[in-house]
Amino acid sequence: MLKHYLSLLAGLLCTLAGVTACGDSEGGSGGAGGEWAPEDPVAQEFRFYPDDKDDWVVKILPGETAAGGLILMNANVTINKPYIYYTKTGKNTANVSFNFQRIAYNGGGVFYQCEYDLTFTSAHQGTYTGYMSVNMEEKPETGYFMFDSDEAPTVDDDEEQGGQDQPGGEEGQEPGGGEDQPGGGGGGGVDLSDPGLLKIGFSTISPSEINYQIQYRNPGDYKDEDDYLRAGICYGTSPHPTIFDQTAPVETVIPYSDMASSITGLEENTTYYLRPFREANGAVTYYEETSVTTVGTTPDSGLMLKMTYDGNNSMTYEYAVNTDRSYEISLNGWKLSGSWTVEEIGYKQQGDAESGSYRYPVEWERTTYFYLIARDLESGIHYESEPLYK
Image (cartoon, rainbow, N blue to C red; front, side, top):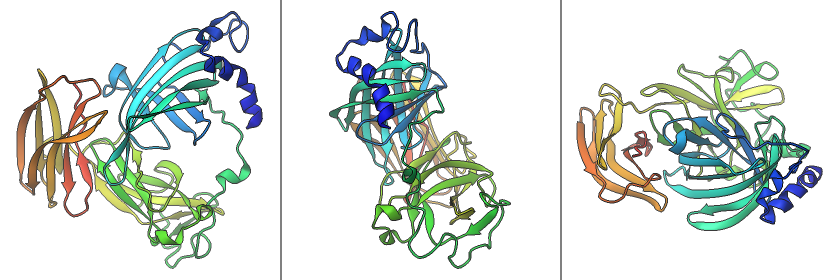
């Protein structure tokens, strides 16, 4: 790691000194004639390594819900309603700024704004300096980044080994192990079932996204970070998904955490089956399975939540309940300073359906959006429409 930092020191000092043109001089910061800052990084990935916190990933994808046709995604932190702006400022320099909401398990969130000046020291790496604002509190930030590369800095061997041992014995030795083997094996070819250790909680569900949290059934047993487990999620549209179906990234399960992860790119009004899994000692262990149905946008959906922009700062909202669940429905707004309830629509049950309208009376900024929320009165899960931007 130290060697990697030293190799980037020249570019970092140049950036910190504010000499943004240093990467543009003949020879640049990494060799004669180099021009490494991309014009348009769509579908390519930045991995940022801040000096004082864990690394995180930004992937820019084509899309229509964020300004400039860009969507910010993060593999390690659940984010919501993002905007990202990338501008090439020189042969080897660029500026990137973005804002997003980090989703909490209780349905709330933390609001982030970031702006980084990037200096490319090669085609696939460089340094950056700038700031990250958390709930409007601005803090300086520096570090280095990898770009469009599978490479990663060297880490200590034990960094990825933490949490392989669990309180109460070896993996998969709980009662009921080995009863569920739908996947044909993973790792060493052994599938075990342990419904009693981990479960899934849900915070928000939209037509295309599920925000979830892997939880311990007995979180009090995990008082030391060395005991924390690492687990992922496998999911699909059929019961008993396995690691050979779709999976979400493996993450450290932190007891009593209120932060959530997300699965994106889902089909609307579709039931998905999810269960946590762990792989250790040549065996894959699956934990308690659950299912949820995404929000729909047509009246025949189980739960329809839909927003439409009508022009002149006006919008139409629609909902329909065709399940045996009961909900509290509201129209909500979001901007950088926080979220607010625009209108309490009320408690609704099966057979209820309605459309309504609202006109936003002030300037509609590009970072402001509106959405419907239907809170399940039994589970507390927040079902949301897709956000409506102007």
